[in-house]
Length: 185
Image (cartoon, rainbow, N blue to C red; front, top):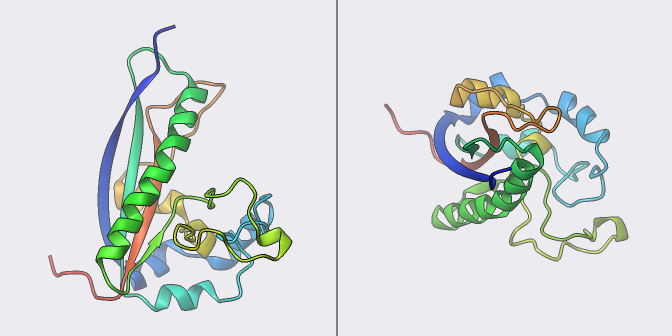
C-alpha cells in the first residue's frame, strides 16, 4: 500500500454570537451528549462547569470560526492513518488559536473537542489544571452543534471514517470569541 499523505485546507467564517446562538447552540441537548462521554467530569475542558455556558457565550459579540479539512492524497484511504493525522493536527490548530487569542485583547479561543494537553487530567483528583494556558473549552462542550456549524458556516458536512476507509476529508472546527461586533460587509 502506498504511503499515507494528506493536505490541510483552511477555512474561516464569522458570525454574530446572537445569530450563532439562535441557530447552532442548544446547551441542554449537548450537555446530555456530554454526559455519555468518558471525559464528562474528568477533564477541565468538559462539563459539568461551575458557570452557565450561555452566560459565557453572551459575554461576546462575534464568533470567528476556523476549520481545518484534512484530505487524504493519492490511493491510500487508510482511515486509521487519517485519524492519526487528525490527532497530530489538533494541538497545532490549538496553538494557532491561542496565538490569535493572545493577539486580540478580550478574546477567547474555543478548542476542537476535549483537552488532551495531559494524558492524566487532574480534574478527577481535585487538583487544579496543570496547563491553564492551553486548556480551552470546545464549541460542543459549551452547547454548540459542530455538525450544524460545519454545514451552515463552511458549506460541508462532517464526515466520518467508515469500515476503516477514510472519507474525502475529516474536519476540525475551532473558534475565537471576540468582544466586538463583526465588521459590516
